[in-house]
Image 1 (cartoon, one colour):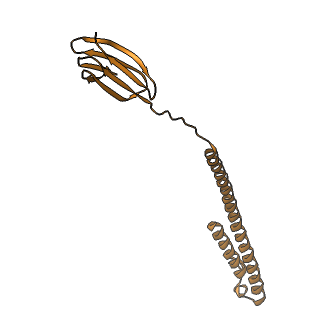
Image 2: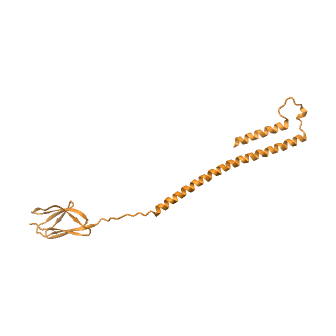
Length: 181
């Protein structure tokens, strides 16, 4: 843009010089170099009109550049509007999506150990040992429902119940009775 302006100004100066001094003619006599009133007025008007044409040309170039920038900005705005629209659609789709989840709480039951013998005993439930005195009942609460294993040992008798698997329902009480024979 600046180079076009510079070229225009150089051309204008050259034209002005040519019109004012009649070029660089060495053979012209010195009388012709003296300015006359009429040609000077005509050349100034000519220069003035050429200057106006150059200014209009520069303004046209500036407006073309300005218009192209506006077109680029408009195109970018269209792209941004499209992206915003797609984001809004995605958000609406997410907000309308219903997520259903099930909650399976851990259910438990109770195992009651009833030692009706005169001997102390040990009961192993799911690998954990519970000691029960003679004629004592021991509740074991909060045992997870489902399958469990147990084994019973009595003092002086040894194993009276080999390891056995049973099932415990939610909120159920399962009783292990100890009475060695």
